[in-house]
Amino acid sequence: MQIKLYHIDTLEYSGSIIVNNQEWKYEGVTDEHMISVTRGMPLKALLACLASFELVYDLLDE
Image (cartoon, rainbow, N blue to C red; front, side, top):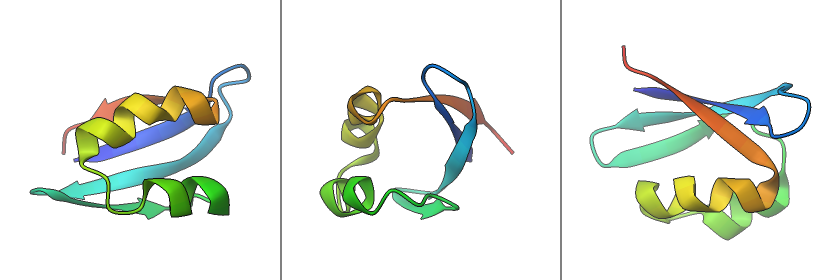
C-alpha cells in the first residue's frame, strides 16, 4: 500500500509512505523534523500525527 502525502492548505504533493505488512518507510519526504519525531511509530499513530505537520493523506491500495 502507498499513502500519498499532501500539504493541508495547498494540496502540494509532499512525498509518500510505503507500507509493507506492519512496516512503513518514507519516500520523497524532506521534513527531517517529522522524520525524526515519527520514526518507529505504529502506522496508526503516524497517520494521527500528520495534521500536526500540516499534512493530509490519500490511501492507494496497490
